[in-house]
Image 1: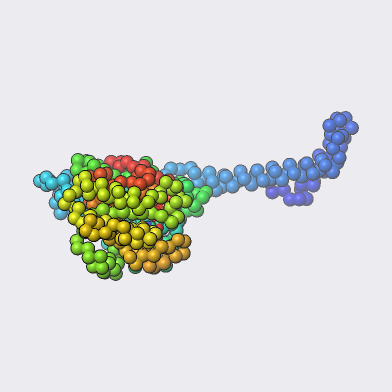
Image 2: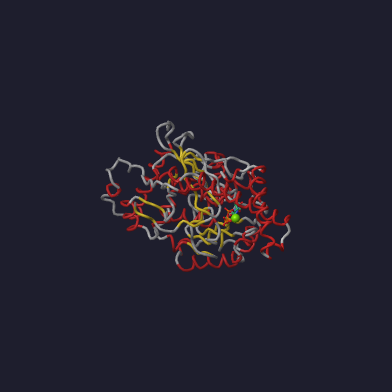
Amino acid sequence: MYCFWSKLELSRHIRPLLTKVEEMRGRYSLLAFWSRDKLRKIFVSFYFIVSFMCILILFLIVVVIPANFGHVKRIINFPEVPSSYGSSWSDLVKGVNDPSKKLDILARAIEQQLEVLSSQTNCSQSLTLSCGHNDPCGLGCQLHHRAACLLMSYTLGIPLIHDSKTAWPFTSPWQEVYERLGSGCKVNAKTIFVTWRQGHLPVLHFGRACSSFPSLCPLESQIEYPLLAGVPIPKGLLNIIKMNHEDPFLWYLGQFIKFTIKNSKKMQRVIAASARGMNIIGKTPVVGLHVRRTDKIFEASDSYHELGDYMKIAGEYFDTFHELDASPRTVYIASDDHTVLEKAKTSYTLPVWRILGLTSHTTFYNQPERNSDQSLKSIVQDIFFLSQSKFLVCGLSSNVCRLVFELLAAQYADVNSRLKSMDGSYSYCLVGHDVPKVLIPS
Ligand SMILES: Nc1nc2c(ncn2[C@@H]2O[C@H](COP(=O)(O)OP(=O)(O)OP(=O)(O)O)[C@@H](O)[C@H]2O)c(=O)[nH]1
Ligand SMILES: [Mg+2]
């Protein structure tokens, strides 16, 4: 209450104090040193400091402390194993010996589970997860966050409400290039909102989105961020993947990336037309090069390499392992800088080399140009064609490189020998932090 003294009460309390001090001035030399006016100023400043402290304490008591007491709920509740073959993950692959067939069956089962979650439209009684993105970054970065939304919805076993508009920087909507992600459920009181926070862990909160920072949502209405210590995975599933794939983390993540970026019907037609234009039949690209230039040099100083360095590695791949793939040596080149492809087409020619790539792509240097429909369609196609290759040369500092690597992991058990990174090592980066590259059997 002391904090809410009026000015009047202030002078009522300070005046007698000042008189008392005045009496003491004669006795103590230090007080005599200050004038009455100076003393008054000191008391008034003191009053305001105390008032400010009181308001701060009240704010802490009323808002911050309640928000940080209680405890965050932990929910891990994977969707049920598709029941067509039995009731457990091992039932699904019983009697199958071929490792790649086993992985295909498991991949299809996860896809079915995600389809069931996505097909829900009437969700008034169930929990749902509203998740999007809060950073209007490039496409590779966007897709990593959207895949994390899907992964969280799977881990919690609740339908995703994909917030496709928030921080989507492109002029064309998500559905123009990718199939709708998540379910047809609508936000209601049972919705858990994901708030991404730059430099901090995201907050999952019931009923409304939380402020980014500081997070003032009460702890008891929060859900533990499921990717805190790594990626949770059903135990039975992990045991089988471990025996059949050299990098279970990448394989598992690859399933969610694959599901996130299913091309829309319209985009499939665009891709088919480009494939015809390049004379690609089936999975033609053998080596995929992702040559990241333009702004990347400011983000990762060791990311710039000459085209010759990339092509040398492609050449070594053909020399060493794959005589059958080597006639002609077919390379798909994707780059944010269109001159890379132009140069490759004139320097590496038939009968030794066959260089593929989108000749229609032009370089977009700044973000507004990159957000155009033309730019979006070109990077979507580049990601698709790169993911058709058997061997990849790119810089793992790039989101696009990491994304394509994850897509290769979903296809090949020996994925680590199918990548040569020009810079850095693999990490799964989300806004402000990396998800530890471990699978947590749950
Ligand atoms: N067409 C085309 N555009 C590309 C290619 N690589 C990068 N880009 C452009 O550059 C942007 C890269 O965006 P990000 O997803 O942020 O990738 P990044 O900068 O490598 O990754 P960060 O580490 O998050 O910055 C894309 O959205 C495209 O506009 C490519 O191979 N082809
Ligand atoms: Mg970037």
